[in-house]
Amino acid sequence: MAKIVIIGGGFGGVYVAKGLARTQYDITLIAETDSFVFSPLLHEVASGVLDPKAIQVPLKTLLPKRYHFHKAKVTAITFKQKTVTAGKKIPYDILVLAPGARAKAKGSTLKTLDDALAIRHMMTKLPKKAHIGIVGGGPTGVELIGELAKRHQCTLFQGSDVILPAASASFRKRVEQILAQKGVHIMTNARINHNGKGYVQLDGGHKVDLDYLIWCIGVQPTRIKTDKDIYNEKNAIIVDKYLHVNSMDNVYALGDAAATSAPMLAQAAEQQAACVVKSIRGKPTAFSFVNRGFLLSVGQHMGVGQVGPFVFTGFSAWWLKRTVYLFKIVDLLPKCRLAAEYTKKLLVPQQSL
Ligand SMILES: Cc1cc2nc3c(=O)[nH]c(=O)nc-3n(C[C@H](O)[C@H](O)[C@H](O)COP(=O)(O)OP(=O)(O)OC[C@H]3O[C@@H](n4cnc5c(N)ncnc54)[C@H](O)[C@@H]3O)c2cc1C
Image (cartoon, rainbow, N blue to C red; front, side):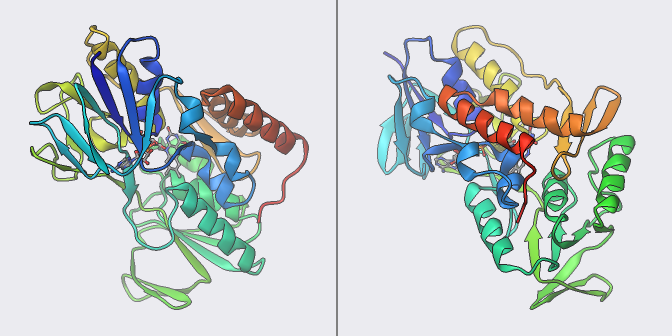
């Protein structure tokens, strides 16, 4: 029986694994951590609104029973010998690379569940009106500051002249209005050149006093040592339109680790996974990203959404984001747990940290 090895237990790896459930392949999924984590809701764990258990699913319970799960870090891939090194050497016939990305910043950041828990812990130690700075006005920085602004004085530092540069002007305007209502101070063209004790200094010399600084300046693809050069200058794996790596038709890459024109989003990883599954099942399909809309929560019960040209704001956008992710959770038991958690949160006003 042909062996498929999937590296990564995030959106890309898990959706490929689930898509191959009805095939006869011998499938092994390797991941550094033993849980699938729902990153789009990490900011709600960081603010103390959601229980960490609500957004993580043990990979073992999520994968079909006949699959092999190996918790280990993949340290090398030898394409010539068709092996992956993850503590031991694991042979493959077909290899799927979905190792995602890592935070660019050092220090306090929001990429993993551990990061979210570290922020959550810090929030319990800070006084109520402490001044928190978030660097990076992309979706992660905006969602996090939207959560933290309820109890803290918050400043959002954005290096360029607008926050959410990839969003439409009307979407951005709505988000700015909500953040202003929450008392968030947005500083654009504000690049931090020195992070001192209790303050930051911006290009130009301006100093801002802060109690806590969180970096949300984006991610870079995870790089694994290989015997062929498969990476571009940004460390992303170069793929063709079928997501094949380096003209090897038995090796695929997808998700945040792959260099495609799609944004680094869960919905892109999911769509790419569908392509990889079709290809493995003998119906190669070229990948093209379909934008299914964008939903951003900006604090509890408040969100902004865009579907096509339509921008909508308020409880409906926030609720839709939660509901979309609720239905995305692939395993029944955690789905029930999350549903219960959400229903409780919807009915009982929450107190974030
Ligand atoms: C805070 C935050 C909020 C986000 N919000 C949204 C949102 O609202 N909507 C949206 O669409 N997207 C959102 N995203 C982006 C989305 O989470 C990613 O695009 C998506 O997770 C990419 O899937 P992936 O499978 O490529 O990587 P990941 O989901 O990151 O999974 C990578 C997997 O690879 C494993 N791995 C890494 N290196 C190794 C190794 N060497 N050996 C073994 N295993 C390894 C990891 O343990 C993990 O299991 C958000 C991301 C973050 C961080």
